[in-house]
Image 1 (cartoon, one colour):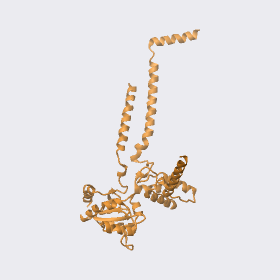
Image 2 (image 1 turned 180 degrees about the horizontal axis):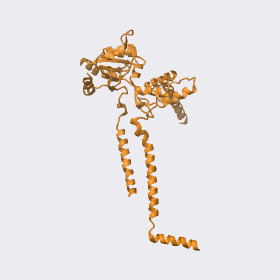
Image 3 (image 1 turned 90 degrees about the vertical axis):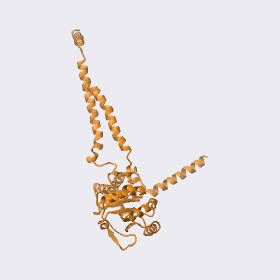
Length: 175
Length: 156
């Protein structure tokens, strides 16, 4: 009797472990959350893209819900998402850019060609602010609440659907 | 034909060499212990972008940045744990090939040991059950025959 029970335990255990492992197979590892979720925007000190003598720091991101977009002239998806970002800015959302691993010249060229939805752009040629944000490829978009806490993170290209279905609701939620 | 093949092989080799040279920088260390720590740390961290490459083996820009940061932190005299925490704070648990032991990972680390213990338990139970069964299996008639056989052996 015990033997039969033990033998029954084997297939049950097997199915249990198989189901557990199977649900992990369906996950997309590139869709993982940012490690900075619900944490303060990292401290930084940098000049702006337009003015090398103007220093800004993390206090730039307090006081109002802000979308922070990490972009570079070298990044094709950044160009494609520009219309969406301009639309967000037209909707009255405060936008701040981080010009990531770029040169001033190319960054400014990009803005004059594709439009400038940003109140200000932080110049980050070495990618050090990007590193502290856990950015590993542009574009990435962060939603920062009025207290300077990161509340939402979007990895990669922002499509018009993303704006409607994810970003606008998140902005409303944290306003 | 053989000549063509030879030329082709040489071209391939040259190409492979140039790809490796372009990817990963060489770093000089005065201290061999620190060099070993650098190797171990960069081999134990997963590139956040390329998903199944360690940062010591990846030519993604972010891997280069991470190697550079590991190098800087080593020069600053930080411990391995401090360096790992520094990276996890920014890029998440994801980058660790060996996840740390914590609430979320008890099952992960415990399951193999648990299964071995369970297997041993099953074997012990089965052996014990079999032993009991074989001892009890003798009927009264069999026991009498066994006794008779033993006695005959003794008396002869």
